Image (cartoon, rainbow, N blue to C red; front, side):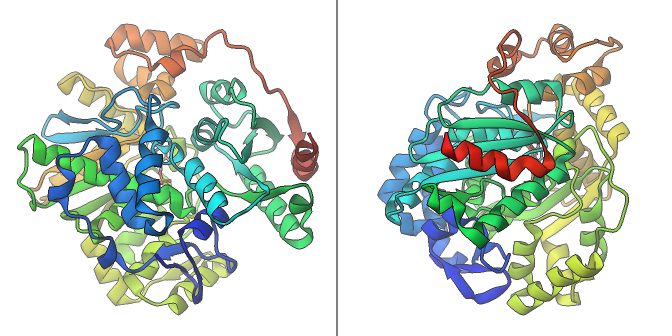
Length: 492
Ligand SMILES: *Cc1c(COP(=O)(O)O)cnc(C)c1O
């Protein structure tokens, strides 16, 4: 498979190099264009169990790793890590279906991809005959850090350091990270906000490119965030899995079109759906759901992307994003021109906004429908869906549910819709509890217990088990000290 930088036809890589480097040298994102060769025959997926089905789809996107290697690696990656054999269960709720992507080790949808990515990186390291250890640096606003720590824990040939903003993640998320097990992990707080941590990590990469200190210390830096194509491949798989579940249950005929409603931040989750469509999955609309940071709603409805707007901290923090990195890949797929993407990304950097040409706009309106819901609407939705269907949504999933309802209220298209559920409600116990009860707890753990008492929904064991664990990591550095911290860690 050839992956192209979104900004230049000349910068290409195979699967192993694309996964190892994460980002192309010109700042573009590695993207496949030959979807015809990745076509999946749904009839052949129907008899497979979940791990086998995931392996087929991932092998289709990353064929040059070797199909046998992928067929071995994927079931190993998921083995005994998820609450259900099924990995990503599909549940009927009212007139729609919820695809539960949060049954993994950290109760967030990022587990689905971050269980596989470390093993792909490990395999790529072997295939490229790299002797150095791969060092993953991650800045996190909460979910990615924990899922990456759990995914890379004790994976041979890799190490990981996660930076989180001090006081900038929820109590539960902080406890999840600082109690992480594994011999190759470090967690460090940064005095600053998420942007400071993210900028710090970018500066560390740039500093290493300039002077090569990592290599001298026997390491090579790499990235686990959603610009890595190794994260998109497993995400495309669960779209196929959901579709097969519907066919197997007799809810649809093979070939019948359906919609997916997707809570969106960095545009990675929903872009994987666009990949699935191009690989032959009968998708009519991908419904792009945003919170009050509704830059994507405006973009899909008007063709103008404008990041110059206020930033809101919301009850769905993983969608609090104004620059959706993966959108760049869609622009290449819909616009078909590297030059166009390069120009638009420069306009975004320099002016903070861009407008796509009309033909791109027309394609985009065909593929996506967009809407948004603020915190009030999301919490109202959690309460109502709980009362009517006894199903408990987290705030991210509630945004997608609400936007699906708006789509149907405008007339919809009469097709079945699958709502992607991206987090356990217990990761956001306080807000979810406030939507279903009058009780007002003091601590995060109290909120978790009360939510269980009120709803009877079991607390995922990884979250229940946090209470009483002792923190392993108490490091905290100034944002200017992150580089020194990494260099010091490499010595140890
Ligand atoms: C990361 C995340 C999202 C958004 O996914 P993107 O790929 O960034 O669009 C939505 N919900 C939750 C809970 C997440 O952790």
